[in-house]
Image (cartoon, rainbow, N blue to C red; front, side, top):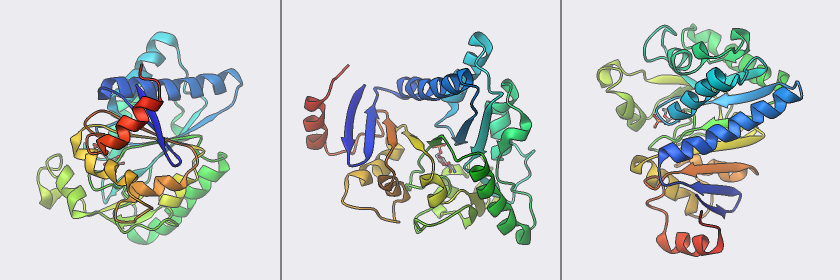
Length: 270
Ligand code: GLP
């Protein structure tokens, strides 16, 4: 692993997704373990998509083989399509139950995922309640994040503002194209989603963001440009004091090689 920092962001560069996922698994595992020992709860912010699947697999194995308990874990998911039935194969509800929740001992009452089935006029209250719930549990201890190919975090698409909270958003065309195959074509792909806002995400005590593969390289390279821009929402992470960005070589492939070389010579290369 190669470690380097750029401003507030601490990068961890791995040869491949599998090694990067092992690293993130260990961060989550040790946080839950430590809190369990102290009889404290752990509040996790969770992501969906392809990126976290290996991490969830490892958490399930750890639960099965080593008895890691999720009884004191509370989870808030970043987002959900709208409108979508939770039972639908493509809903993030379905994803979370299949890829994690049904395999572990989490209390269903401690699972919070935006509801993609509400009437339009019920959404603002739902979003406010979601924000309040996070506060009631003392805030998110560790927020796991993926990145969209257009630089979105959660479903905060380009144009999202730094003060945004949980809300209904319109999906970017590129985001819909990225997922169209799963929905059986663009015509069947939802146009909207409910997502935690940028502000909601930045309130987490710690953020661990992962990016695997060359399709994320352009978004990641924006973190090395000056400043923060709503054109690439991932750059809002520069505002947070505790972000780890975990990359594989593909996702890091557009970082200026001169910059990397200088950083690598300054750090341990294990
Ligand atoms: C989706 C989700 C994000 C996710 C991102 C990356 O649209 N809303 O939360 O992080 O896209 O997805 P993947 O991990 O499949 O590349």
